[in-house]
Length: 142
Length: 303
Image (tube, rainbow over all chains, first blue to last red; front, side, top):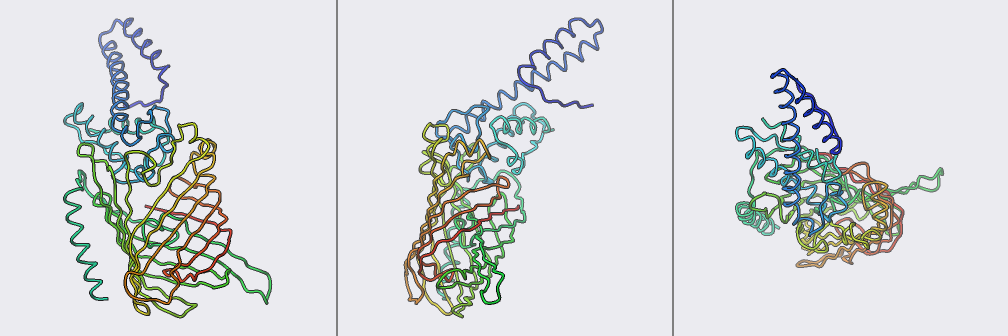
């Protein structure tokens, strides 16, 4: 069974603490391992999101001419990125797929990257949206 | 004519392999998609990016005739994602019965395009791109009762890195800067040629330039997530004969437009603009004159 839900960063710490507390209280080894597995997966997701954002920001820097790139930045209007680059088949989408491919090769060596389709960018606004898109396709790469 | 076509074919075969082998590093399987474009004119990437213009007056009278104005094209084509080729069938109408020297032109033909790209060696994302376009059209002028065969070629240089002022279709100063919140600018261009055959025999060198000013981009971004709600636009189309002679007006075309640019979504938009137009466009049957108009400009792209 696969369960997916959205959670804010500030609430994530509460969730992890609660799970760790629960893990420390269970007496059954199987239950402990199950909760620990959930905790590790959450931590890995966070780690990947942060690492992906950092890498993406570094690679995008030359297309913004030094504008500070924040998670909340509107990449269409605030960073000075060319509108042609955003629309191009070899532009922003190529950069995102490169980041995705390099993370899949590094962390899931036997998996095939589930490349992001260009039309998915149409529904996005901020850098965080783009990072989430990369993370989502990283998760679905098997 | 035959010499010209031979030269065009030779030049395209010579340029394409050199650029594509040296500059294009494809790392994924090519995908071919169908596309539908509606815009101002299929001449080149510059005019394809402008919205189809339409306006009309339909009086309830038997003595006063209906008048209307449109500059529009429809293109149905195929585009490839990785190799960046595009082929399309086009139909165009350029009609204006609201002015002193009326214009009524119908065009049919096909267009070919190729985007050359200099890619980053590691990420494969483009550092700059050079879209090249070629269109071949039959053009029927219903006012002058003339038929011409047009071959139009054009090239644009789209730079993605470096200062925004040197990049096409990029707003400067940035919205994040103080001044950029109040006013923004962007530009675009196209350089090329146009050959008019059949009833004419002339080769023209062409230069198209567009300069946009966006007022209060910060406010526009807050309201519609785009910075170009309040838009002023200046367009210049210059041309000069390279060989041959023509009786067509070759005066430079200039237009200044002020309007509201409303977006349906990220690719499609409608713009309501007041336009001041001066000059001629021999490729569109427009004689040299000066007029003002209010027009709706519609841009639709489906892929």
